[in-house]
Every structure is written in structure tokens, then in C-alpha cells.
Length: 92
Image (cartoon, rainbow, N blue to C red; front, side, top):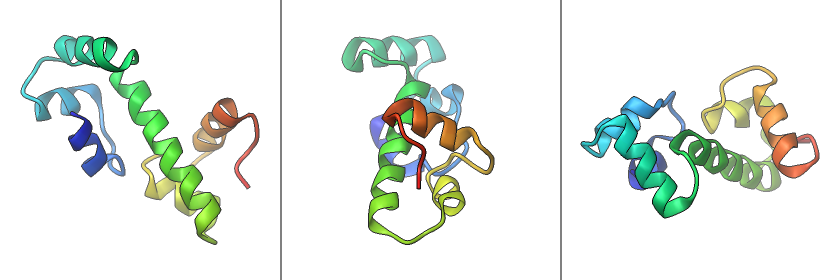
């Protein structure tokens, strides 16, 4: 499941797709994440995307909107809200 997320985090993903990639049901997917990583699959995906975005923000001159799209957040303020909640500062 982690390899699938690593390969597809830039796409619009949902729990069903992550579970399907591992050939398990949605509930089993969630249980597995909870047991091994102490988080839920979609929370893990969001954190993974935020880590990728933070790296791009510090290593590239790309605009925030481009970075948000590249890491799978899409357009809009959702990326900035998530980033601020995680880091305490807005992306800039």
C-alpha cells in the first residue's frame, strides 16, 4: 500500500483505490494502517503529500499553486490550510 501511495500520490486517490491496489477491503486497509503506522490511510496520504510539498517549497522556485497540484492537493486553499495546520505557518 505504501508503494502504491508513493507511485500515485500525485493523483486523486481514495481509500477504495488504495485498498484495491493491495487486494484487500477498505476496512482491512484501514486496520492495517492503524496497526502498523498508527494512522489512517487518507491521513497518511495527506501527510505524505505535505512532506513532498515542503521539500518542493524549499528546493524549487515553483509557485505554491503549482506545487499543490504536483503533490495531489489540486487547486484552492485546501493545501494552504493543511500546510498551516501541520507546520504552524502558511506556505510561502
